[in-house]
Image 1 (cartoon, rainbow, N blue to C red):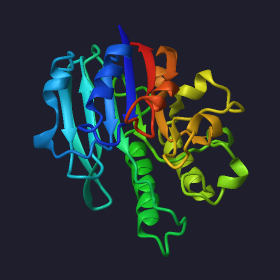
Image 2: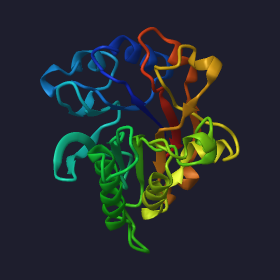
Image 3: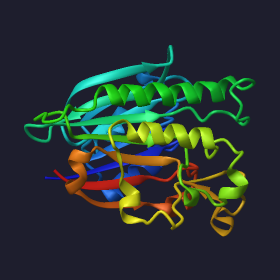
Length: 273
């Protein structure tokens, strides 16, 4: 069974629903995970996804901010909504995709951006981001399968994780070391999360670490493609049990040029499960 999973910070699902539908018709992923839907659950555009075959859906939204959704052609069970750091701000949902005797657990995450000042003592948003990373690393570590476990080893985590961890995940490593999303403390915490169950960085399986790779370009850049001052904030992570199943990845950079584009573009990976 081939399984394709895409992740996209859409920056308002209702505002950009035509772009979402266009992308789904273009790439036809089996599962689409959205972040920053900015939509209360009662106003989520379910009909648009139903009409395209995404009959299995889990959404958790709020007005104007945050929000996550999993939209799937593949049936799923064990639908879970998780609250982090004592807040109910719609940043983590989890399902179990029905892919045989050993379902694939799928986490969709929207980790806090952290504001502009990389100092938790004066910036509550940055402190929240660091706490979120610490909590997620421990949560995943607590769920790491024990040696010899027959099931529960297949897990995928996707989303806007708001950290560009590698030197070539940003347009200028030197200039961004003091900029939120690439500071040493954030990179260290991303590493701690990645080590929690020995996650595989799926896109970097195909693109060497010394090559530039981005998924986000600021709206502040009038000509984003000419300046190409991007960052890789959107990630697909796979557990070691899926190492041999990874087949391909795609970052659809050209979507940044679409009308009313999000500042993020979709990232997709395909697995043979």
